[in-house]
Image (cartoon, rainbow over all chains, first blue to last red; front, side, top):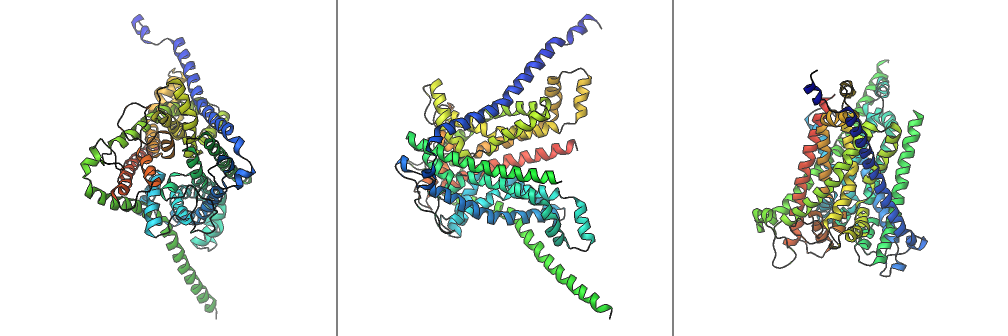
Length: 291
Length: 306
């Protein structure tokens, strides 16, 4: 090589030093996300811990921060999520079973698949508009828990379907072939062999989908969940409030005390989410060990 | 006599097959529900927007620069809302794109399996935190910090909301970019190393270009999430629709406007009420367009290496 050609080769020491610095930069930026999460949790714990006690869980909201609690919000969230689970789980699993076990490849199947993928990306507030127009006004359910649960179900159906399909796909093909060879019909195969095998995966997906529904606020505001509720819903047609709505309401007030209450509500919400996610992880873990 | 049980069996099989058909039909209807949902969204938005646009001409809506539907003199130019939303999308991308891409490169090219197994789930927690919590965090932590640094900052400002939305979409970028980077075949990296490239040269000049379409798709999906984000921007960015380039001012996004109307006592049927469907339709069309493009890009690049 001539001298001029050597000059074109970048300095090896410099390149390695550069490589080392970039590695540090990438590492630092990666941990930045973790640190931000820690700061978020720490701030909320500090601002809200003083407000969470038994009275906080068992009192209705009030104009006076000291007396305010989340009884109606907690009850509303339990009602809402319970009804949402009852509606969305059977429908979502059925759709997944159809797509995985019964449908033939073709244009309709591709269309449904693309449609589900795109629905999963529709902003939640758009589901709120849909719920307002169809459930609240269209079929006149009013601002009830049922209208909220139907809206939430539409919102999380894509998530449930996608998760349930993954779980069904993971069931070995040999199980299906064995059942069919013994004369079982397709549905019998699904009912007695595929679904039991896919159950842990489906449960994990369902829990994660429901934990998304618990934190959703915007669609509930759209369908008109109330922000000041001093009663506990007693049926699916009752009005309701929910934990995230109560948190939103307290956060949007200027007084410092209400921000404390909001942080307290957030702590309860995050603890519920944490428990649900822990359950999902535990189910997955047990299932993996058994295999 | 040998035929009797056989025919009984046949009859049984036939009955069973009938039940089978019924079950299949029920399952099919459940799968179709997703299409009904999409159709429902489109119909609802189209019908109400239609009556809105009969009163307000479309060009006035799309190109008007004043948005005051709740105050006299009423004006229905959507640009201030779009500008506010764009500011949140761009601001959050400034946070999420560098940090998310760097995290993805670190996790896929540098980190050990053990570190990866710890850090990735932690980052994904960020995506599971409800958005109203981010709103609270923006209002009570980020905004005071901003005001301490720049005292002229408004209590409600776009910057604070953009930062928390950026944190919120960070896992979307990191996780999808990580998938894209890991889909690049090992042989390409080894070819790079064999030519004497350093680790970062392989990462930035071989792996990232190889995964570029997946990376871009992740940016689009994340931007679409930021576009439709509601609670954080409602709480932290304010409720004053205005065309501005100053992120320290109070603005209003499309989603925040929809929330503002549905919290108030706007009577159903009036033009004010119909505005939420008109801006909702705009929101739906834009986010759907972004998702369709991103999903298509994702599917195409998956085929390249398979």
